[in-house]
Image (cartoon, rainbow, N blue to C red; front, top):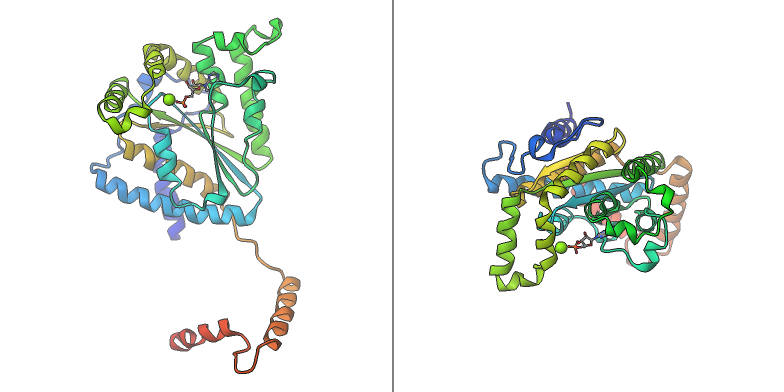
Length: 321
Ligand code: AMP
Ligand code: MG
């Protein structure tokens, strides 16, 4: 086995418990433990693992961009204070900002409400070679909108489309993601799974630390009051929209460092699966490169090496041979 095969096997084993099996019926509180840490006892060890993950991501992202064939959409969902922003910041810290686009979705605007429910998300999809991150996503359309149906009233839907609306939306989302996948765009869906008690602790921290006050929103408290309704909506959503082409990954999020390793591992897994390659030049391109090389060498001023770069490389090569 090559090193890559070994790394891949370890990552696959690490993330396997987080995968929502397509077709399974999920009860979040029963099936997934927010405090799970996969036998990684020390945060220090976790930080080392994250560094490895971040480095691997950077390498794969460079190849993804160079190949310019596949795109990756990362969907991040979670309850408030679960660490979505921090996860994005840490996991993507090594990648070239030119190859990544992050979009946060808030309460829809009047213009957005004037379109079909997937419209605004479709406008923000990554291009080929790019990693797009949705901080909240089209899944809000079956989560916050389901918990607060007054949102649905604002969407101006024809009356007859409101029967079985959630089943229809699950189906529309699955079809849309399947379509994206068949067009070369992989959809990586991550749910950061926070416990109610850890959320309480983090909200209090935002109040107690003056430098964190800006993060506190009274709206978060109102949503917290609906905790059980959210857990139910999330469980249903995971049950209906985890598919072979775009499975959900439920990442334990009570420890921030663990959530970050989990998210990085799922993303690395996807990129390893795509296995993007730097484009290779064919014989014809190689020949024309050599022609240009001869031309540039002929332009060398008096006293300059014909190819200064080749000259620089030389001593190292002689030493090595
Ligand atoms: P935050 O991500 O904390 O800045 O908050 C964004 C807010 O926008 C959250 O309260 C979401 O519930 C809300 N939001 C996001 N998408 C939608 C949607 N499609 N319909 C209604 N509210 C939404
Ligand atoms: Mg918020």
